[in-house]
Length: 451
Image (cartoon, rainbow, N blue to C red; front, side, top):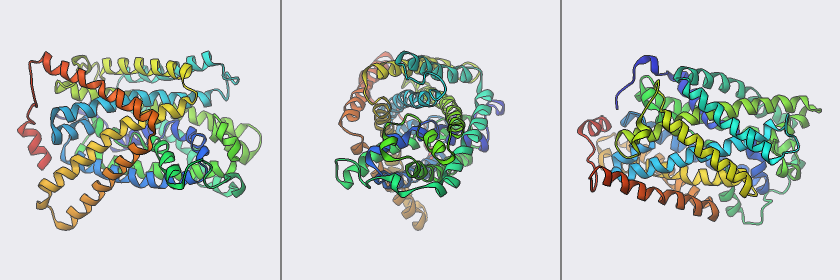
């Protein structure tokens, strides 16, 4: 897929902001409450997940240099495993993106309700959530330039309180607040695995620049750099700020908190003003994250639709934005949000685990595609580079399998069901084009991947 005109593309700073803006949404602001049920053992899970996320980031970076163009995990899987592999990744990632948006907006609501609807009346929570989904959709529809500027501004604003928590906030940590090391009813290994599945949600989005690579200037260089730099920056903030929240809010209170960073800021400074500042930052962070994800949720199906592996309306663009994809995905996220508020007891955690399950499928295929290429084409590489790349990709692959296992039975059930719903869609797409079997990857694509 070719490069777009310079006026409709963005450079490295915006690419890094897109990664960090998409990764650091409201998830990190709500995550300590979801992890509190496991206690400080979840910090071990966070470290393990961080190592796995970095392995994935390096793997995605290598893939983006070898296979340029928008689509990210979709194009990597299609190149290695054919049409059905590509479609399955696009379908799974598409579910991840709009289901993840529902989870992000639920966390956003918790911080909005620091100021309004403090009694958490369900109908008003739903109204706030729907506004949180549709405002980013409008920003995207207004054009790529507006979206890029929004990402840079919101990333800067959200980082100030998070960096504070990850540095100065550590001074106020009290060990008594951590509670029992393993607060769950499971073994150490079971607690780490379960907490890791939730923690992985914090890193969803490290692939966003790869997904929209066609809109990045000099993608062979900038996509990999943005992915790796963005992931490292997020890892630093995540681990240290979570330690601060665990150490400043008692575990019993943290389990029921809807705005844990607000509670941590209030505990550090006393009063409510500091918590309200953090809440405002979380709201800005959530909106900025949703702006980025709303573009990503439409961009991968656009790439698949261009290859006739997704319904044709997803390929249509308006002012460089895949309009149908933005609207369709926001509608689905809105429906899931309403259903979640009216049907699930643990709304945020349930949505997180569903999103993680469907996200890990494209991660797994991407890591497998890189291992496959290295073992079949890699011997021409210098031995040290081959060993390094195979090791990193293998770590990413094993980490993906481990994350699937830790998602839990409920998320696994819903995730597999949603994934397999794509099979009849794939059959319909092939039959409508009078095709049977695989469409060969073009010579141009093969040459680009081997460059």
